[in-house]
Length: 273
Ligand SMILES: [Zn+2]
Image 1: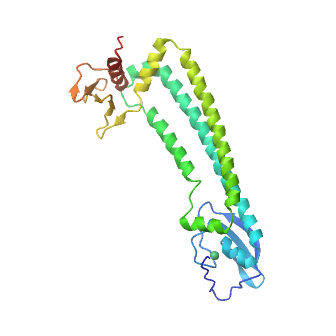
Image 2 (image 1 turned 90 degrees about the vertical axis):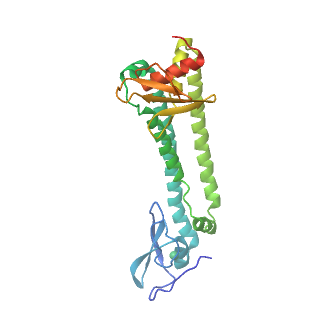
Image 3 (image 1 turned 45 degrees about the horizontal axis):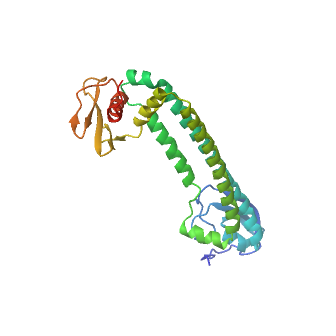
């Protein structure tokens, strides 16, 4: 049972009338009738023998109105709307992310040679991809923010059945998103099959330049087949890049960071240009 502190003098305990319910978006209101945890869904109640409208949580509203079913139904309307909003946002975000990733890949592929020769600064496009992924995971976190007390409370309200329906809807959304993702993957594979060996090599080189880690000094590094590679810039000359293999310095220099990475790729794979 919820511990109620209905000890405020002069406040009637029964025969309240429900005006409406408001969704605050997060638990942010302390119930006027008890000292329970902050509430998200606020029931506005009025009484003919009391001058003020009271803002209370579900448990108190159910007792004060004597109408638990009606109270529950009013709150459920808002709860379902909130879940639908989150599901729709998630769907939109997933679509935007897939489209943006495709766009970035296409752009990079087309601009590959020009960028490598002209740009001696770090290209923030990689960071942009991770930023979008992070945004999505943050959005998904929002759909489950119940405190332990909140979970027990939801059981009290017998919401489990309704939530299962919503979860099924979320799973359906996910299945649809998976289907779209599979179609995109098949399209990418089809394009890959249609490419010449030279085009495929260029893409493999391009991919090799992604997913490097960044050291405290800002140098890109990675491990590959038991060896350690570091790419670094000449401190004085912006357009001179080189690399280390297991601590040994390469002699040659390259006009950009990606060009240095690709030189490593070519050496590892026996590519002669
Ligand atoms: Zn209360």
